[in-house]
Length: 269
Image 1 (cartoon, rainbow, N blue to C red):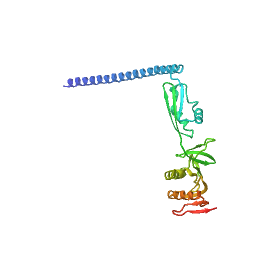
Image 2 (cartoon, rainbow, N blue to C red; image 1 turned 90 degrees about the vertical axis):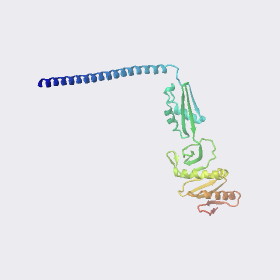
Image 3 (tube, rainbow, N blue to C red; image 1 turned 180 degrees about the vertical axis):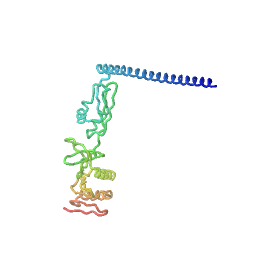
Image 4 (tube, rainbow, N blue to C red; image 1 turned 45 degrees about the vertical axis):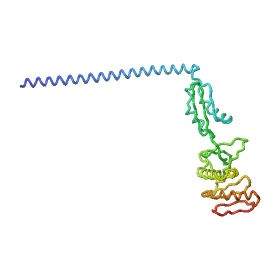
């Protein structure tokens, strides 16, 4: 009985040893396989890198994919001069080296440009499409500026006459008209346009220096009109009628205060 037990123990030990040997062989095989894969990838990378460098050098020295034309759309001669000065160092000799993102970021620093699109063609053409800002008022703060509906201000062109109302009494914050004043200016102008476009075109100046009231004048006379910031809409119709009477010579006031809902206070000269 004891002999039988000893034989079984030897067999069990032998099986365990064989099992350990199989596991060790598998581990060694796995390590060798991973090492081979890493070696193949490394040498493949080296070869690919050399091939890439060779290809780029070959392209750089040839006429293939060269930038042959730069087209600027929706621009003006004056703006094109500004654009050329900005992108001069950004237009590379090869089309694949031209970075649209860098060109867009650089051009959008020009105040009168709202946004930019850049397209590259394998034929060697770079197309830059400009979306210009559309002015809707003039803004005076020491100097005269144009401003679009977003409130972004940018220089006026010398020798050009603009038929926009002039905004005064406000300030510039981060390149824009002070947002609270801009909101009221937009509302007043939009309402005046809807009411009567002729009436809107007669508004020459809008003063935002008072935090509760808006002062404005018409091009046909120097009379100053005063309306509240909140609820000015109902007063504009009164201002239009009074201005018509002033134009006809019935009155010659210095100012017209329309702060009260149904009353007009005229300060006579």
